[in-house]
Image (tube, rainbow, N blue to C red):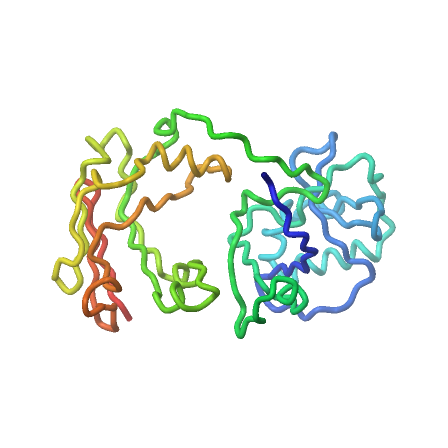
Length: 294
């Protein structure tokens, strides 16, 4: 069963730099497609519910995606201002397909429990700090696209889609993971630099058996975790099949398949990383990554 939160969300889109913003009339930026155009284009909606001005036709050097547009900051915004001051052809709304204003963002950051009346209807206290969760970029669809009910699980030839394997260090801020942010894991797992990765992408035909590799973690030379990938509860194929039920996986997407026993928070007494520590994560046949805590 697919549930709906019933939320009407105010969404904030970030830009590369602070623009010396000058108010402009009806600056309604869109991404759209049309049968006579190749790929997505950047446009201006001519008023709420109006047609679309093709900004790429007005200025062919403009990026064709919103992310690239935002990355260029004031340089691209000035072109839009010129377009607004010019009488330009308007494509009828019926002849274009509106895409989401931003597609494939780096992050989709969501805030939970952020309306006082929403907290009251659930009989829960108003949070003392923002509760953050996330959505994958593949969840984004256009403003008029269908919402698709998830299909039942289907077995797939999952390993055919695996490019290779590498070593990752899943660093966690346990206070944020276990006690703050509504006990949602996201913030505790996703501080900048919290996912060292490497040293190489070892193609799957170069690994004898990815589910029978020694795996260990050392802190300042002391072995903290030691196991074998044969202890994984869900193998690579199962994980890909499971995740694919919910999100679209793209070339370059990464799945961290789990951590062996010995993590510091569950030791007695607990052991946490501190400034100056050196962490080595190693998987047989894949290599070792070495990261210092600063």
